[in-house]
Image 1 (tube, rainbow, N blue to C red):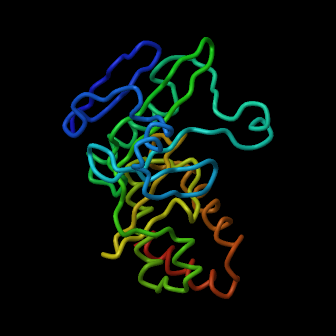
Image 2: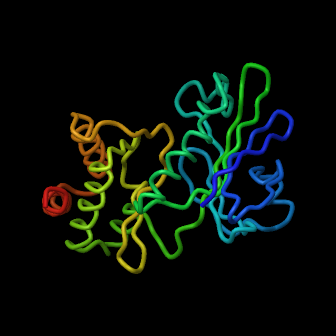
Length: 233
């Protein structure tokens, strides 16, 4: 991987030049991919994440969108305080560090920050993790076995031991592929912190709350025990 920056007028693109030699400003524009008929899938959540056929292969394009009450008046603009502080570039650099360290995250391809006066809009393009489904999907299909719970716990521990704090660790941001590998995705507002602090327990409690929102306690209790066994092993 080779991190490069390209300035295109009011837009800055941070990208991996080893797979995207010369990105244009429309690389992170959803309308561009739609006009070419190269959108092949979609993930729902806060906003949309689109699967596109990029020059680097199948990829996930996500535009950064606000949630909560503020989204009613401001859906996609953020206060500009500097290029490196923008959501897309920050997440790209964090993914770059984690991917380079061998952690199971999607490969970062490109990120954009487009400045418009005091505001900016941002996007992120990452490689698609093939044949993977979220923890939510697996639970709804009743196809999550005890060993899967344990592998999830082991994977979360790997991130924590590297000092990675996920800002929104929930069951939709945990993916499992057909080779039984576990990945974490969506590191918006994530950060690298000191490994031995209380944030670890806060993240685990957040994940447990998200699971309690859609599965019965009889399923969660034994599953959570296996997850924590993997985490503490």
